[in-house]
Image (tube, rainbow, N blue to C red; front, top):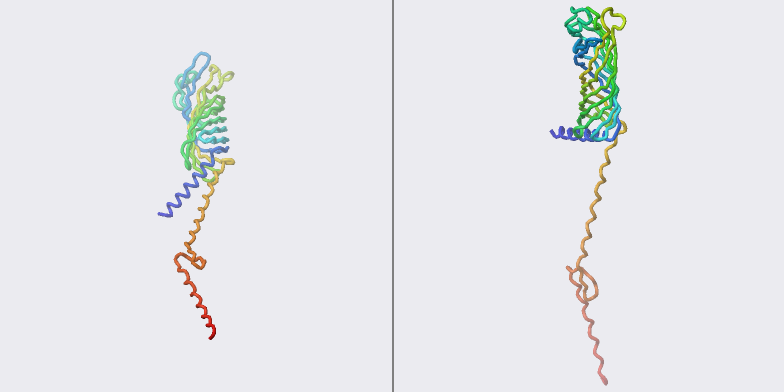
Length: 293
């Protein structure tokens, strides 16, 4: 149990140091994962008619990848992103109005569809960082420009199949979670909801569709993606050095001088000692002889 506690303390110290080193540094990020476009309803319009949901395209799962360059200001991140998405097509739902407009009412209903859709986009993202040291997250949004291209083929008919592209403003919502694995590298997961403004495909049948009037198809592209992310923090700021150790305590004062006393003979001795005895007095002088003796 004691070893487990020590290991947890070391790990938490490492994660805190690595996470705090990100603030105030630029970074590069690679993201790659799965995307699922929503069903795309398209409006059919010609010189006399216009109706929504004329053609609805259903997609398979595809892939989504991007390259990001950003700067971490602390609580806020600003980044530029270049992304690419691709998904295959699964089926299309043709309305009775669209089938009649192309002269074949028998096309109504679900039609097997092959082909793919690709999306290239350039976005500017702003994100708010959440959480503390160690595992943390961000939420944010982005705005930019996207170019969407459809290449479709329908079985058993080619009516309403099309290959075209268009560009429009794009928007996205982002949510991320990440964890540091070294002083400079983070790994994480990112969710992206992406959508465009209206895209206009066509005009189709301008010269080669017989009695079918020239028409356009228009709609928005929307998708959701789940991505794995790898982030490299460039020149992340090192944590401040630890404070210097406190100065050593002063040495203890010297012991007080012992008490002394001065003896009658002028010698100085400890107060706890006895003075030496005085020397005996000298003998008296011999008596002087009497006269005349």
